[in-house]
Amino acid sequence: MNNSETNKKFFKKLIERYLAGETTADELRLLINYYESFQKENEWVEALGPENIIKKRMLVNILEVIKDDEKSIKPKVISLRKLVKYSAAASILLFIGFYILLKNDNAQHIFTNKSIVNTSIDNGTNKAILTTEDGSNIILQKGEQFMLDNLVSNGEELVYASAGSEKAEIAYNYLTIPSGGQFFVKLSDGTQVWLNSESKLKYPVDFISGKTRHVELLYGEAYFEVSPSTQHKGDRFMVTNNNYGIEVLGTQFNVKAYNNESHVTTTLVEGKVNIKYQGRDHVLLPNQQSVLDRTTNIISFKEADVFYEVSWKNGVFSFNNKSLKEIMEVLSRWYDFEVVFKNKDVEKESFVGVLGKNEKIESILENLKDLDIINSYEFNDKIITIK
Image 1 (spheres, one colour):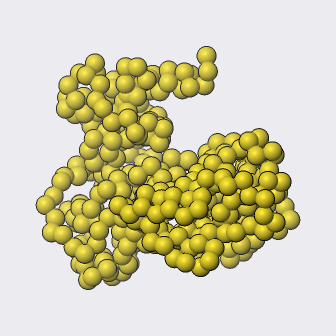
Image 2 (tube, helix red, strand yellow; image 1 turned 60 degrees about the vertical axis):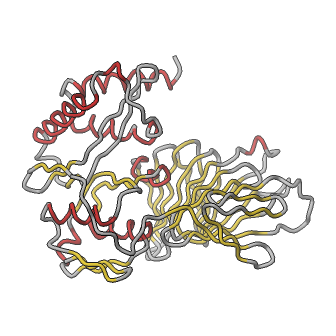
Image 3 (cartoon, helix red, strand yellow; image 1 turned 180 degrees about the horizontal axis):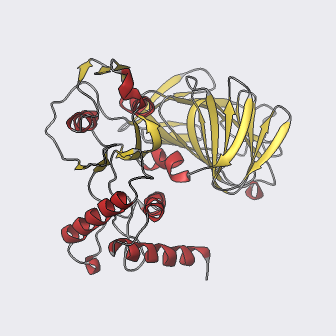
């Protein structure tokens, strides 16, 4: 039996325990982590029974698990929605279709949909600025086509074709993702890169056979699915950020290196990568993470929860014991706003949970207010003040 079949059987067993109300808090977290693999499945399977009834049963079971484990679960759950899917054929379950929140006083609350007055703060979208080798800047956005030499864009992604370059020198392009944006680029070697808001990538227009395939994440966050060296005559693939290097021995990993953050974090999803820093090498295996402290130049290694690290690529923000300040910093990149906390105590409130990237920022703030997590908030153009 292959790993995929084994995982499905294990997952189905967890689902059965979950529907029976027998899951522990750890098993519940494990079910949530399956979201990354199965979140694209969105149909309800009639064989499970009426959707509304099943969901109500799920809610009762979740609240019972939380109640039983209230001593060990301290953070608040902001929102869990559409997390895991189940189907008769593929063992995928539509797991949660609502919001729950656990407060410090162990009270449970359901998030509700609200009628919110529109503001000038919109959700993020696919957009980027392409800088070509001659210094030209081209704005890429939905609905606008662009073609040049070996590249084409439909405004939502950028795709390069290999031109079989025999040039002695490599020509580079830059892709800059502004605040409130995200973008996907497929490089000429077939490597796929998802870029998060406020990120910038430098990469060759075409790779030269016999040389290391080198790209540079100048700043921001990117998820890489690298075309293996076996398809490129053994040519290695390297990602660098300043003097920090990642030699790719496998395929899928996430790099986070924002200029305004003190750490550079690499999380391995699949395969192997070799972290190269200050003359030292360290190989990461799946579900491991390296963390470089820029202030001390000390690099550490630990186990990682991949779901929380890479879910942004799949359309959600997920937080594990993150403070409200950290959460608002993440959201500010996507919604393109600045946040000011007048109540400094509220900055430290910590949460676990998931938010869809299609949620309105007003709705998130309204729910935080209704649950007495914040007293009030106000908009002033692109500035949100939390009181």
